[in-house]
Image (tube, rainbow, N blue to C red; front, top):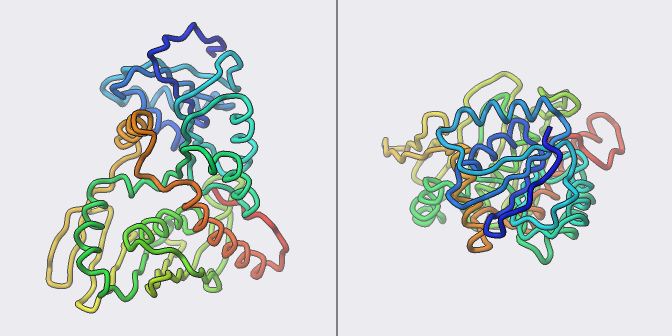
Length: 328
């Protein structure tokens, strides 16, 4: 393990990535190929995660930047241009607080879900969200085809949309719903008014050990009157976004990369990889101090309502009084 840092070139940008497992390693693939001269500090307590990251770096064509790996936070560096928090949601506030105490950090990108309780989300926002550039990684907002759907389809059809259904199985209702809540909220430029979780049928241990997942239905009411109905069964089936309008249904299938209209109209819509969007995203964040991800305060409003709905579901089904929900 590398446990020392050489003297830094003052022209180099410094990026900190905490967590280099499944999602963190994808961030790092994108960072490694950035066109700006960068030192990337990678922190993970697990050597297994670090080995996975190194293996995935072999997949990319060119590694232009310096990468350094640590099992704990380095002590002889004072500031970073960007910190990316790619750990699980468990204990995330404590990590962010420690980083904020140790270093001067100009901008932040934090993985979803932000935290496992409403109080932790509030604490995170208080720690880094009020006076700093802090964003949440619900990345469809960054993707060009999704921007085009917003500028074209939703601008033309906003008054004709009655409801939106998301269907499929085994895609992670609890851990991934925020992606679609954020997407629809952004597409329609509206906020959530309420979330109904009474149709969630049960919770069980997720594929990631130590966490739980929900199965059933979630209904989200937006302030513009449109309802988002999210359905996730336990048995796998392809996820589809069905936009119901006065003129018929549009079906978006992210696997095939198509959005098909009621008369056979076709819009190509590509779901871009985290490894492909991270480099340009962070370059823009460093150079312009802004990006297209939702600000952490904006995202936290929706995430608090979501966490509250999940807690209500779990506590009601299992007769508990938990104040946190163990999702990632």
